[in-house]
Length: 143
Image (cartoon, rainbow, N blue to C red; front, side, top):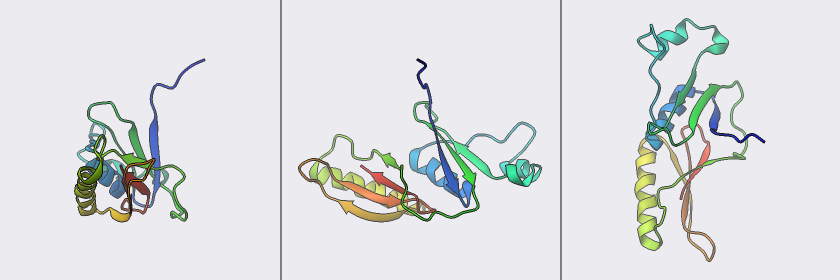
C-alpha cells in the first residue's frame, strides 16, 4: 500500500493574492517567483485565460510544512470551516507564559488583517488557545 509523502492545503477565496500574502506573513512562508519571462505575477496573469487567473501559492522556505494553494471561487464563505489550521505559538508553554505568547502572536496577526475571536482558557484537558479569522473570515487557532 502506497503512503502519502506530501500534502497541500487549498483555500477557496474571493481574493487569492490577499489571502496568500496574509498566510505567507503569518507562517513565515515565501511566495514563489513569477514564471520565467515575467517580471511579476500580475504580468503573467494578464496573459492567461480568465479561468486560469489569480491562483497563488506559498511554501515553507525550509521545505518542512505543507504548500498552501489559493484559488478564486465565485461563492463566498457561508459556514464555519470543517478543517482549520492551528498556528503553534505556545507549544510547551503553560499558564501566564502561554497566554502571553498567544497574545503577542495575536497582536502580530491582527496587524496583518486577522480578526481576534474567543480566547479559550485552559481546563483539565486542554491548554489555552485563541480562536481567530484570517482576512477572508477563515477560522484558525493559535495554540
